Image (spheres, rainbow, N blue to C red):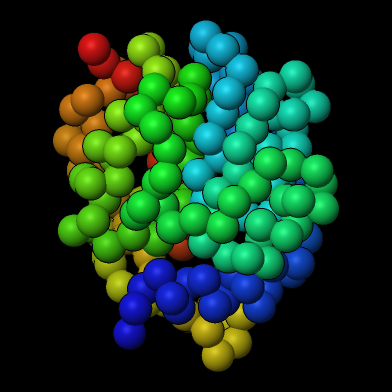
Amino acid sequence: MNEAHETKALYDKYASEYEEKTQDYIEKYIKEDFDLFLQNLKGKKILDLGSGPGRDSIRFKQKGFHPVCIDISKAMVDLCESKELEAYEMDMENLDFEDASFDGIWAYTSLLHLPKSKIKNVLKKIYNILKTEGIFYLGMKAGNSEGFEENKRYPNHKRYFSLYSKEEIEKLLTDFEILHFSKVEINSEHIYINFLCRKKQ
């Protein structure tokens, strides 16, 4: 079973439901982190990596930034385009951008869909496509498991999740300076660990 294919199929089918369920997430849980991310940027161009329906990028655009959305799900990309966002159907394992293309990269609960064996390569590409002193925001789910999960909200479909400890993530972020850490505890099964980072030279 291919983890990217299964995750894409779920998001293609439930894009609108996902959008409705998560539309107030920033204001409820990570408003401080969102503001800090923007305050630390040296320029305007942001890659929204695993953008979903464009929930975060529409906010970036409203604040005068230039977001570029990518998502593996065509349905999610269509929702971004309906908001007049620049959006591309793209696999985060194959980021098709030139080096030093972005002032910031926003990856909120997207890299958690990668198997742990693949995340280092993606983080290296993120490092490369960030400009000098570029800002990287990473949101992951806390835990110590890896594999497919089913959610009763999305019947007959599974998503791949890799859950990490704070220490595991810190070891992966050796090319970045961690500027800020936060934790979101929605309930015992949904704890998110978030890292605001700057690219090291």
